[in-house]
Length: 339
Image 1: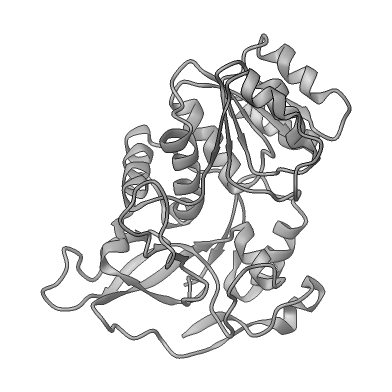
Image 2: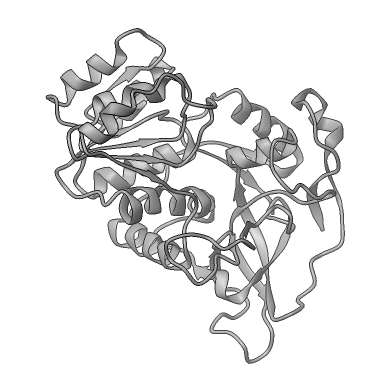
């Protein structure tokens, strides 16, 4: 089969030699696992970090990729509700563990260290297979798994978002943030956003956000406070960095800050007094449990949510997809056609 195989990590200028699309051995249907023929896969920021060597426990060579939608190719006889030809997506969480509150010490994500979805075929544990939402094409469904479960857990399991609440989603444009906005809007929340790009703010408003501000400008936090009428119930943040110091200033008394990433690095000069005086909840969130994934799919199916697709690439041109994500030029998900 054809697959994108990462042989070395390093600067993305060397990506064409580090990540090669080549013929490789098809996965084996061993240990009760299913084989899925991948129709579409999608990129996550995690894939870029792995290629750059900025991820823990990297084992090479590996086929990256955590998301896909495709067709069941084979399942062990008599062991599954699925049959060849079924349209499925895969929960990328591996060995979450028994606790719904956090992942286990053995937890990993499809695509590192286990071979992932940037290939014509991928193997998956039967319990990780789910029927594709019926209203979505394979192209659309491939955008759902990792971003969808991350957004769902951060918003609802951890953040306890309710209809009518005001929520700020920082860094709009990334796959998780875009889906989180769609989920929050569908739940009846009033969504406000930040970005470093005017065009992404305009796109978010077109999709239903109440308004947004450029976090690169002085006083952006005052703009957000004015837009929301001084009430911000919850903030969903993936950036950290210097702008994190403004979040406890923005969020209302008794509000919540949910952090699911730190792409801008450590936070500095944070006024800790705001956290205890305003009685804020600060919540960490990453990926999601099997129940989170199942509930997320039910939510997507019932609300007929269609993820925003930024662009599509062929597997043979996957390095271009990596570079676009690294340049932060996308709004929504970047998908890869693998068939």
